Every structure is written in C-alpha cells, then in structure tokens.
Image (cartoon, rainbow, N blue to C red; front, side, top):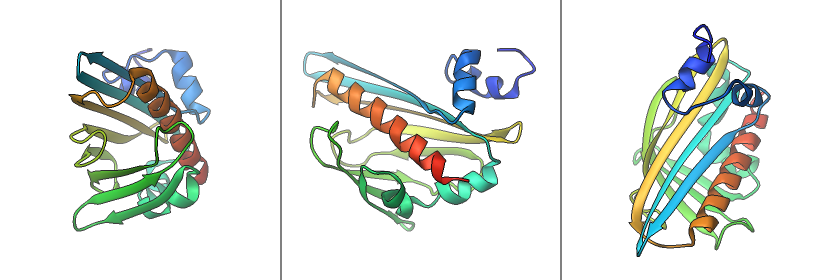
Length: 181
C-alpha cells in the first residue's frame, strides 16, 4: 500500500490487502476468509471480514446498529432480536448452505460510533468464539473489519464450515450495506 493511502493503512496491520482488494471493497464488495483446521477431535476456526461503505460512518451506523431489522434485510436471517440490558443479539438463521437451522447468540454492544466492539458467542455450535469488529472512517468512507477465533471439539467437516461461513458472511454484509443509502 502507498503510505499516503489512509484506507490501505487502516487494513495494513489487520489483513494483507492488495490495491485490487481495496478497489473491490470500494465497489461495495465484502471480503471474507475463514480457515478451519482439525487435528484429531480438536478443531479451530478463524475468520476475517472487511468492507468499505461509500458513506460516512454516521450514516452507516444508523442502520448497522438496527440489529432487530436484520431479519428484514438479510434473506437467511429469519429472526433477529437484541436485548440491550444483556447486550445479547439473537439471530435465527436458515439457508441451504447451513447444515441445519441455527440460533446464534452474540454478546456485543450495539455499534453507535466508530470504535472497537468485542463480541463472544456464549452458546451454540461455536460456543466460546471470540472476536471483535472495528469501525473507522477514512476519506469520508466507513471502513469495517472483523476477526474471530474459536477452538473446541470437532463439530462439522472443515470444508463445510469454511463454505458456509465465507459465503453467508459475504452475502449478509453485502445485503446490509445495500440497505444503507
């Protein structure tokens, strides 16, 4: 990345990006990459997601923070609720790429300003998954980066987790960003 490129600088320490990747994201595409490895009965899962929205973060955050509306905007999310007292996001998801319908619980603060938002999955298939997402603004664009990691008992084939996590994360991110005008 060129040293004067503030967008490239944002991603530089988080994920090695080419100029082509940055251009791809500036067009509204979401980059998602997961890695799943198994050794015996143990399995680990890591994921990175990056996106750029052409609007300033103040506009993006108004929609991004509406967890309860995700069910209306993202086709495979059948129900989405947020309990602000418990900071608990609950998502019911169902898609042909998923091995079965899933209920995902995420403890996370509602994103209302630029910053770092840690999260954890307290229950479910990836119980104990931890991560964070970062929202920042550069060049009047809203930048998003998330990473997560989980380790535990092997649950599903590695390729299946990689397939549904990459595809559905990308699909959800792009659907959400299209709603933000």
